[in-house]
Length: 81
Image 1 (cartoon, rainbow, N blue to C red):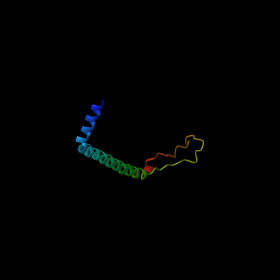
Image 2: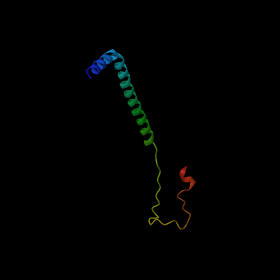
Image 3: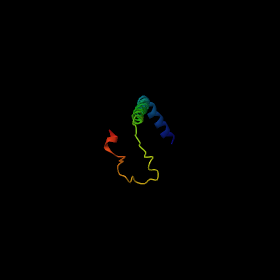
Image 4: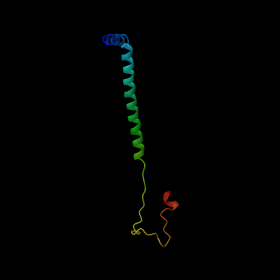
């Protein structure tokens, strides 16, 4: 087992520079993707807050019954202009 540990330490010492470079590139990639995802999320949230919803409530019909006269159409096309 001692031979394996010695061999492992030699290999790490031999490939130390490459391991450091790969590690640094990995960390920079993670940080860059985190910043990019954060900016994308902020743009999506900014656009979603700009959406406005128009809600029309019929207060005359409080019991939930349909309008018997039929002359008041809540979903008329001219309401959506």
